[in-house]
Length: 224
Image (cartoon, rainbow, N blue to C red; front, side, top):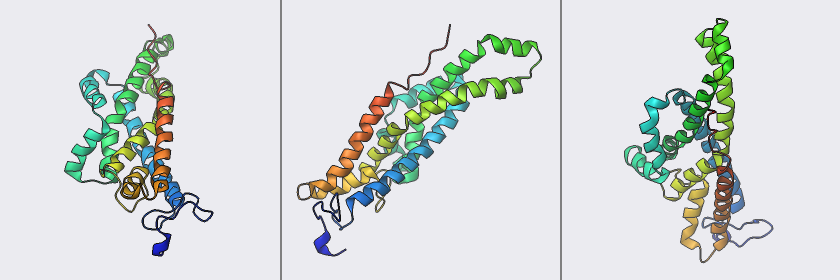
């Protein structure tokens, strides 16, 4: 675009205005949503797979889980960026490293509950093999609830990725990731506040959604 189109105010052609390079803010916000959610889905799937495996080994992972659960994604992102350099892979790895403990705790609680149930005793009594009990009874009872738990944590994961992008530890330019969009707009926030307002509002809504869903992600306690 020509120079005159840079930092253009919202109009019919550009409902959210343009940024410092004349790019449509609404278009970049939409593309950034697909990118942010797509990477968050991948991280969510990795955390879910790790949680299912470690949910059967709670005694072996208790210490590691406590450490991972206490570390904020930004701190892990800095450490990973120091080794791998900033980028999508490093940010995804950093968030994945701290996203699995709540899911693993949920999986472990469900495994304990299922193992204590009477129908498993009946299955053993009729001669069912451990493999059949695991694949036909234990895994189906654990996989579904933990998957729903993982989906509820998706906004929080996306927000953590956006935070790393804002700090320059995640997706690199010219990708339209929301955290990166907010960081790029800081240079001209006084001259063109609309360029920063759009990603800031999107991130605020994402944070509100993450907080609202957090009350639904408490692991179910095992029955006595």
